[in-house]
Each structure stands twice: as structure tokens, then as C-alpha cells.
Image (cartoon, rainbow, N blue to C red):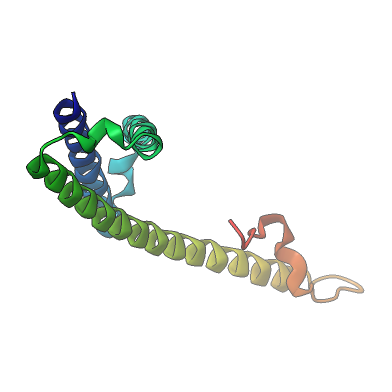
Length: 141
């Protein structure tokens, strides 16, 4: 039974590693739209991986009886997953930074536009920089 458990974990780990690699490549190439169609399946895999990993953490005997070769293969697959996950995280963070920069630039342009048009007519005054409040970002997001 232990060999079967480890083989199942290896297969799942390799699947989610490949998915993280593909998603990271898409993010790095600024093709996030490719990832959108896989989100539900990726979430399903991630939840299954989390569930299976937690089971092993709670009961290491599930894999303790597996052959040394299979346990080493699982360790290598887990290391590859951690590497792919780190790359994925960097790609998502980079994409987030670019997106936030674009949104900030748009908000600033809208604020400048509003300030420029607020100066016409009797008693007109320049609008303050707070004119972009309607599209302000939550910096903690």
C-alpha cells in the first residue's frame, strides 16, 4: 500500500509542477489569458495536493513502508515542485507590479485631466491631487 501511496503522490506532484511551470511561462510572456482557462483545474489540483500532503504529514506511516527509490523520487518531485512554485510566485508578483503601475498611471492621468478642466469659468480653481479618489487603489491588495 505504501508504494501505491507514494506513486500517487509522485504523479500528483509532477502534474501540479508541470501546471505551475506552464502558468509561470505564460505570465512571464505576458500571456495571462492562457492561464485563465485552466484556473479551476489548477485549483482542483492544488486542493488535492494540499489534502494528500496533509494526510502524509499527519500520518507518515502512509509512505514509510515504500521503497527507498520511490521515496527519493517523491523527494525529487517535491523539490521540483518547490522550484516551480517559487518561479510561479515571482512571475505573478512581476505581473502584479506591472498591472499596478499601469493602473496608477491611468489614475494619475485622470487626476491631471480633471485638474486641467476644473480651471475654467467664473471663480474656477484648480482641483487638488485628490481628484483621483474614485479610482484609488488599495495598496495592500
